[in-house]
Length: 151
Image (tube, rainbow, N blue to C red; front, side):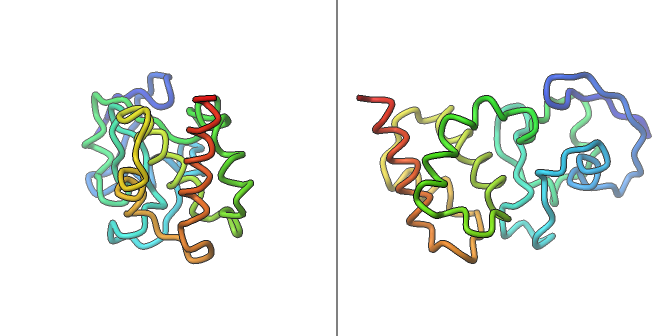
């Protein structure tokens, strides 16, 4: 079956099988920041933005993306570059495997809540599994980024 969508700002028409998940579709189209972690919607590694809202691409069929706009980290590098350094400065990117999911959810958070509280940051990042950092580094990095924008 054919689907039409916008992927990182570019129109795309492609054929997919009915059981193809969005995660596999995106990786087949060069979006390698979208990672497979759990296949059960528990880790956040496969987070992408569909029409600006974060979704777990391992649990969305590719056919559901028909007519929608999908953004991956490959298409949001300009927006992400401002704050990823702040996260790295906190040592919270030890292995880096979880970073794309954290970055995608941080972008969604800052679009929705430009000046979030620490509890709002924690709530937005709660679905991202990180086995290295303990999450405090990501929180500190985002908070430092927000403080730098204020002053």
